[in-house]
Length: 110
View (cartoon, rainbow, N blue to C red):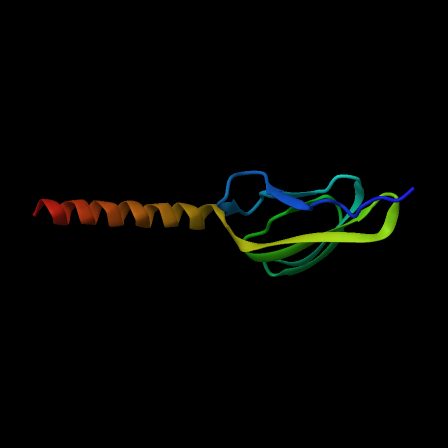
């Protein structure tokens, strides 16, 4: 019996497309049972065996590698690089945007 390599590895966030510290990334592929995360997460190096990883505040660049149940030599992977904002940094970002929008609207009325 032969099997194809995992058809596609996907990484899905637990909460939208703006990442926050504490969000969980999930790695999935049909027919796979072993998932390994490697890379950087915040200020830490990651090398864990799990289908999920919890983001820390800061930049992250993570690779999820998976193997097929019937053929452990058949590997596939996906990667994701971005920034996970801390709770207060995200609030600061939104505050600056609100101030910018208010200053533009005041300038347009003058």
